[in-house]
Image (cartoon, rainbow, N blue to C red; front, top):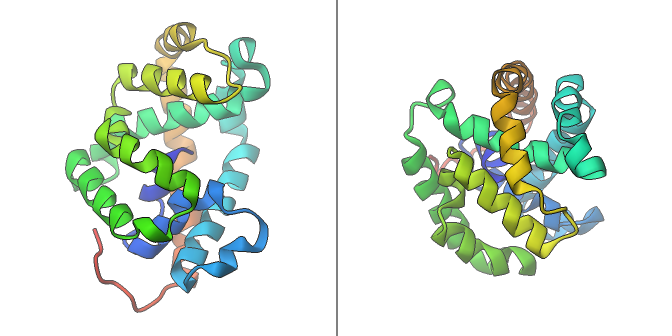
Length: 203
């Protein structure tokens, strides 16, 4: 799961959304430095990642990209899943994707000074580029993979990756639908068990 899916799976609590969004950048017990609901979002992020990486349907989809990306195939499938979610957004939300992304940007920017340093660095660029919204387009996936290849050890195979996505699209999409139904239930159950009274600033 990538940024859009993590935000979506956070439900309507803005603090859980923030925690889920920054989860990759808060290591070990450092989550204890944050307020309670952001801590819950960070823990939810970790549970989502663990659930995703172990799920057989995700592993099957990731195998399609292994010839190109080897050990990074799970990283790439995270991006692909955000694309499929964005492309099929109306299947999962009554709120238009653009409206949802705008609200998510507002929530994150209102808490900008409490974000980890690395998130502070990339968040303005993520917002300006409308990356979350542009995940719905194949071109958006290509740009994201190019950015990741520039700033990490991810191999730069974006052209080949797009061809692979297009060649296997119905298979990738169907497996995603089945998997996403499960992870939605898991995330909702976690939130329901850890619900708080703070409902202000909700989507």
